[in-house]
Image 1: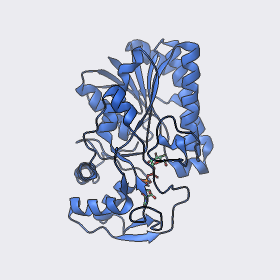
Image 2: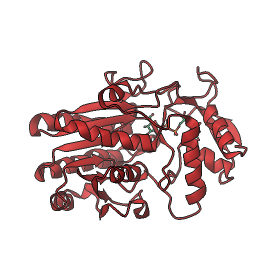
Image 3: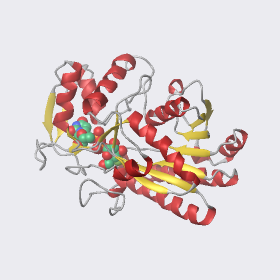
Image 4: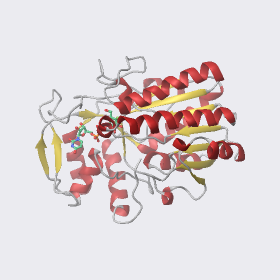
Length: 330
Ligand code: UFG
């Protein structure tokens, strides 16, 4: 298929592009390069530098010129803390820019969309693992803006015949051979742990060890970025017939912060200095998404479920690239 990927120069987007090309799709990347990096975009994809917040003109022209059949939409801001401090920034980029995309798609008569959403739409979950029919009730503007865009998708389907698949997941992690994660500033656990292993930061702060979990630290659902990318591509298959929402998760009991640190020590062979800190505001004890629906309906099977494989891939990439320019942000 001819596919346009927004945010295709970012951490997850660049891996989606790699996987699309491996599956012989023809790919156009649309990215403003605010967070992403041009050098991580496969040379086999066409790159268009553009910002969805500026309206749809360039996008309409690109969709038409390349006869795009479906869009995978990853361009967004994604920091929970920042979204609370500056909700306007999140509404502009995650909602207004998203609506510009949908209107450009209408104009160019592109009717298929895969949306990279978030399990943050569920807020403080009532039970674990979280299924798609559970109550949505975001506790921060990041989750709220992603949910607002999902709601728009529903109405655009009813009124304009748009077909969409919305993917909700928590902790994207790991790396492909060429694309990995290091945000500026970095807030995510695995890249911070690896920076501490390399001595780039003095220690990792463990945000609370008095949760009701197996070792007192928070449990999270780490999912390999390649498995995530493959789910985005599989989701394209349903769009001839229907729209759907799917959760994506690691499928087991998740991993605690301590388990992440111990696994990283085993993988790197290095001591990772830690300090026990206060709980981080808004952190639920356990967050795990059930992937049963996408497994049974689309046959999605994660290949890199084991935390060790996830951290090994992130470590390889970190050693190879973090001293060079090729640093990725989502
Ligand atoms: N953590 C630490 N120390 C750190 C950083 C993180 O102990 O320095 C802990 C957190 O408390 C949490 C776990 O490590 O328990 C993972 O934290 P991350 O910041 O890596 O990721 P989050 O679980 O906070 O965020 C994820 C996704 C978001 C999504 C959010 C929903 O990355 O996109 O879940 O809650 F919105």
